[in-house]
Length: 179
Image (cartoon, rainbow, N blue to C red; front, top):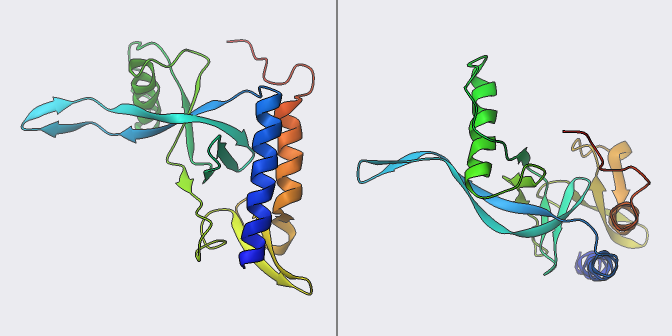
């Protein structure tokens, strides 16, 4: 398994080098802190910024090499009159407003609830990563759809290269949306 981890680390270093050299677009990784009370004083829900990350499909990669499984995503928005259409709609509205209060711009993507993917003895047991034993030793793979079934697994290095290529050189018009 250590060979798989060493190969994965080398792929991550190469990915960071390429993403940095092309100034690939980053998103923000943040920690969501729900509304609560401290000494009977109500505190609003908020986001605490952890830093920039590159979104690479089901993975988030930080410039220091930290890897995360993609969690939840929101965008900031100005507070408006609540619609009270559904509980889940109100929860999403609260998240967008918390992102706005945290200072994120209207087009900023905020990633939260992302799970760290450690490169230790737990490698391949958390999130979309899976270590698969083969004739040539252990291979780290990525389950691109979360099912962790054989048909969803891609070799980690190949998956990372493909996603880095898309992030570093996005197709014309990618990411451009009217808001």
